[in-house]
Amino acid sequence: MNYSDDGWVWRQHIVGKAQSRAILLVTVVGLLVLASGGFVIGLNVGLSLGWLILAFGIAFGAGVLGAGLGPTIGSLWVVSLWWFIFPPLVGYLTSSWENSTRYHHPRMLGFGYASAHAELLGGIEYGVKFGLLLAILIGLVGYSTGAVVSRILTQLKAR
Image (cartoon, rainbow, N blue to C red):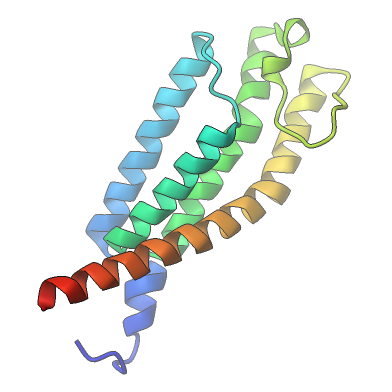
C-alpha cells in the first residue's frame, strides 16, 4: 500500500473500515444495554475507574481494528453521555430521585441539584461539556496506542 496515496490517512485512520466500525457500534450498544439493565435492577454501574479502563479498552480495540478515530470518539462520547444522563433520567422517570444519590450524574464537586429535573438538565450539560472532552482524550490516547500496536504486529507478521 502506498502511504502517499491521496486520502489514505483519511480513509484508514479518521473514517476507518466499515466492518470495524460496525463491530465498534455493536460493542458499544451492547455495553450500554447491559449497563442500563444493570443500573435499572440496582447494580452499581456508575462512573468509576473500571468504566474509564473499559473506555480506554474500547478505544484501544478500535485502534487495533482500524475502526477510525472519528467513530471511536463518537462512540466514547455516547458512552460518556450515558454516564451523565442515564442515572438522572431513571431517577426522574421513577420519581425515586430523592431517596438515593445513585441517580445523580458524576461531578467533581459534591453539590447536588434541588430537583430531579434540574439534575437531569445538569447531567445533559455536563455530558455535552465534559463528556466530549473525556471522549476526545481517551479516544486519542487509546486509538493511537491500538493503531501503533496493530502496525507493529503487522510488521512482525510480515517478517
